[in-house]
Image (cartoon, rainbow, N blue to C red; front, side):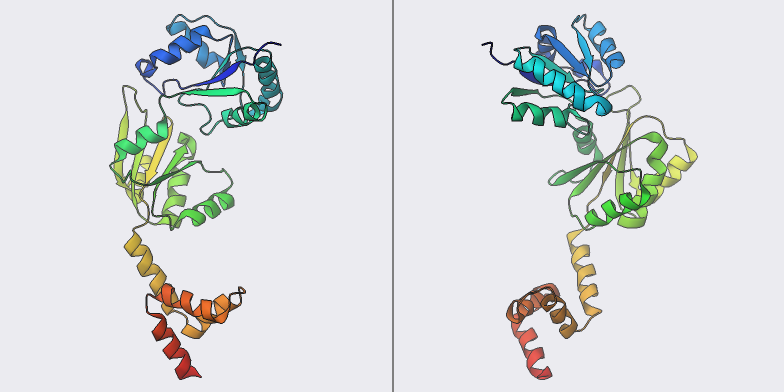
Length: 283
């Protein structure tokens, strides 16, 4: 019985062709098959490096049937390279599903590191890189998009999004509405000749792109909420209700009275003794 093949996740340049690694070039020359998100774009890359290998398409709308085909080939001992249009497979593309299929079938998956637009944009942004979260593309449905932003508006980590040019202004307006006028870095044409990183506020970004039509694929890097500002907002929120209402809120959630008092004290930034004292006065 023949041994299983290996799926190689090959990162390809997001712009500058010189960013491809020597290892990726070697693997692309050695594998039996290359699965590409867009074979027309990939053939240009392969021709540039004089690589002649069979290609098969693997993208969002054929990932189920083509994923099954690729897994069968791997089970038959074929080695396959997976490439996306640009960057690292598995990030905001159907490569994620193929990796899961391989793991389920005990097929070896190997990652060949290389360019990632999100990280490239982050390190150029000038915003905090200590803690960050990648949110990918926001949905085109306005209600769902705003609900998504509401869920992360109090995140203190730097937020990273991808966006297409025709949706950029609407997305910036939604960011302003839900997150407020924070600092943002808008990165486009990364690693290319006309690479640009605009560091400004969200309002300033909207003003710029309403005047200059957006072109290219964008990475948006947004400042996380300031922890002190968040704490102040939460404190103001609790001041709007009485201590008893605050306690009742937790009790209605099934939390016992003693634990509710502890949580109220923590929320309000006071000692448990103060909350107990207020309760005694009430009683």
